[in-house]
Image 1 (cartoon, rainbow, N blue to C red):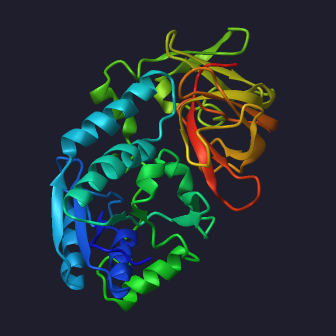
Image 2 (image 1 turned 90 degrees about the horizontal axis):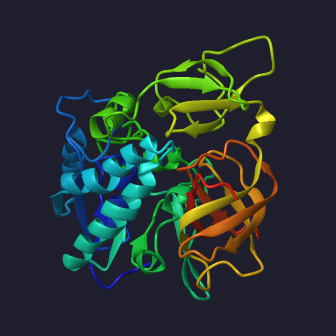
Length: 369
């Protein structure tokens, strides 16, 4: 789609956002690159570090912008990122949840602050390298899964508002696969063509997120008992932060009986509750912070049919979404049990018609209906 003004591209320094800028330039758009400086590791990282928006990544974004001949600016959002992403990430772990910082990043510093900066610069739209599709529907723009199911990132964008969606572009959503993206980067001579993908938690490049959480939220990694469903002590753990609902490996309580899974985390008592797989099955859950992207103001009173994903990598489960009397809450009923429903993760609702449209989503609550 052609725009009436410059398209501002969120350039993280990776291959996806670099190709996004290149494609828009090839299509005849006036392109401006913006890079967010989000955090400082305090130590140099190697060229293969799987990060974004810091150190070498900013340098890479500058190089790509120079190669494409487009203006490029760096915005210091470190304090905002600390307040809106890293602090809630640590607090969520302290509550016994399994957080998704990528959603918070998209919801706050990216589609709130960066989009605002793009518009302040006179931009007509903000483009990102997400593998999702923005399609025009009968009632305005809609958010849909990316064409490549292995790269689809729509789960992480459920909190995008209807107003924001009208000002966003996702040029990579129609790509058949990541190889196609890298091939474009090589064709254009972009130095990041073979750069590794950033990891899920980009501000924890060494994978030691427990130390990050403990620095931000002392006491969040206190040890405690591992107990069965009846409260019998089976062992000790080194901190609830190391576990998530549905986890089987790494419990350190192996025996001759049936496999045990993490059923519940109890931050108030520091207890890790384990049990058989059957104890994980959930057919009803509550979600809060609901964002509705489909037509209307929210789910229908008699339930909106949907395909529901309870984790990014989990297959969807059919069910219905019902409004909750509380503002921003919803009740979700599943046609069959889902296993590993973890508080702090998102429940994202897709259309049951197979179109891949994101109807909305919300955060899974610890509350059991």
